[in-house]
Length: 302
Image 1 (cartoon, rainbow, N blue to C red):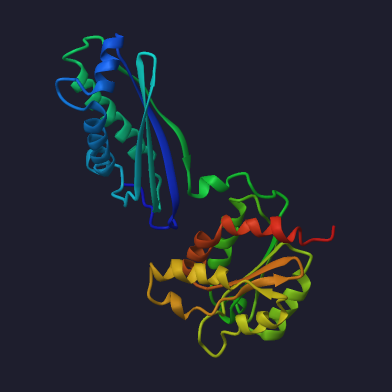
Image 2 (image 1 turned 30 degrees about the horizontal axis):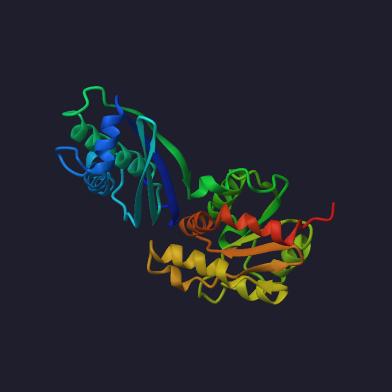
């Protein structure tokens, strides 16, 4: 199966449709009146559809088992057709489109099986996905394309050339995937004065300023301490979300002291210096965090 461990849980909704076509009004009346010999078609098909949704992952090898938190099945009769609408919801890492379509298919097959003894012309048509919602695809193309970022790597060892930077480059790659321009990339030592100078330089000149490194508990981890006094407003929920996401993957995420907030109209983040920690923080926050620029406007005075 596809690896979805890097994805956050979000509300996922999928609506699918299947259509049963019959050959006579008598068949429609038998369905409505409950006189089909095999029983109540709507009730039986609904029960089968509920099971179909729940067991999708057992039938299709690449589907993940997931918590189905709502399934709704609606019928609409239009002439000689019964339109089946299947709605499935979950809060999970991956969508429920296949579950909705599989469920609609099972409903349709159950109806077909129950109706074929009285109608040799019954057929199934138009099994399709009507809509889906949830996940990062919902955010696609909803953000400004002119955002500029400054990425600052805070590390004594990297600044001395004793180690190569990977975390900062991973952050750059993630931002580029959302059409954010990397206007500045720099490595500096863990010095409060230099960190604060970068905040002052980027304030209202970059939309986004991200520091990586110096968020832990060693004596030289001073990035949050340097940045916090220069923030106009802290945004506590940002790093709460990042730590909660990380805690599901490592018990050490709770030790990160990262902060987030605004300096003027620049969004400032301090993220871990490890490549994994930086990457997971970016996965947790982006692209949804880019919504902030619809609220605070642009940070640059061009």
